[in-house]
Length: 91
Image (cartoon, rainbow, N blue to C red; front, side):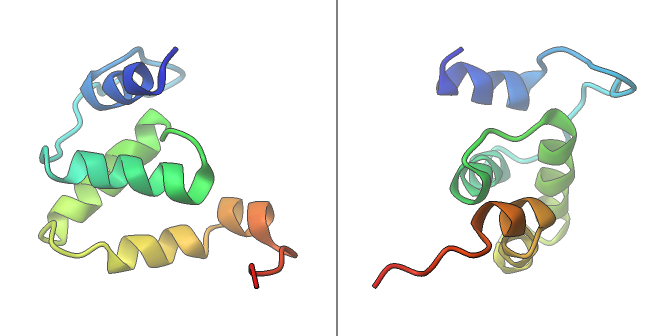
């Protein structure tokens, strides 16, 4: 599946898995690409449906104008820390 197809599936519906039966993502079209980019930048992957919904709705709830709290959360997350801990910064 292409990256574009994965993004479209994440943001427009896709399929349900487990207990995730609410297919509605209440998110502005402005916030969707920012959250998608954050997942790619910090985790190197597309967002899973539940995480995408959570962050997208949170960004909208915060007015959609600031990514600072979301970026701070991504940068200190367990997934990010496990992926990049111990790596030296480029010189």
